[in-house]
Structures are given as C-alpha cells and as structure tokens.
Image 1 (cartoon, rainbow, N blue to C red):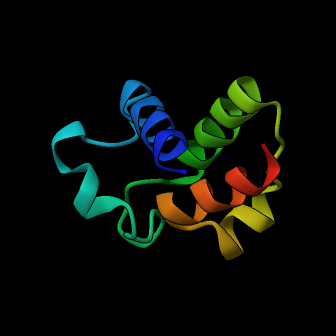
Image 2: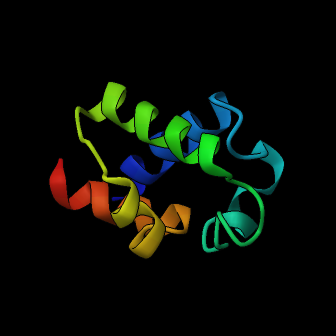
Image 3: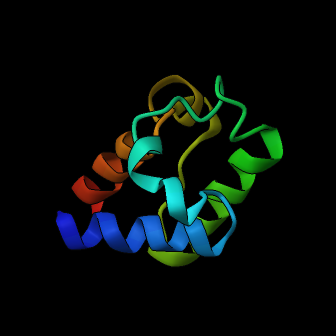
Length: 80
C-alpha cells in the first residue's frame, strides 16, 4: 500500500489539495473540519478519483466516512 499511498498523495499535491511540505502531518487531519476542503474541494477530489481510478465516491459516503487522506487511501486501496 506504500506505493499506492505515495501516488495518491502526489496526485493530491499536483491538484493543489495538499501542501507538499506538510503532507505527513496532514494525512489524518479531518479535511472538512480543518477547512482544507469545502464543498467544491470535495467535488474536486471526487472528480480526481473518478478520472484517475474510475471510482465514484458518493458525497454522503465521503462526508461520513472518508474525511482524511488516509481514510480515502484505505477505501480506494480496497477497490483497486
């Protein structure tokens, strides 16, 4: 899962969703509560995942269960 995690984090940095210098400290942060993602940010992440992995993540699932980068990575890793 290490390479998958690195690739996903790199993708998030490319899309401006994460600051490349602070990635390790941000992986477990709540993306919504911390203000890193607003509603448009969620759509951006969903679109990025759809285009990259062909996986649709419903918004309610994202908001309820996938609120950190590590949670998103774990969810995607099970599906790819």
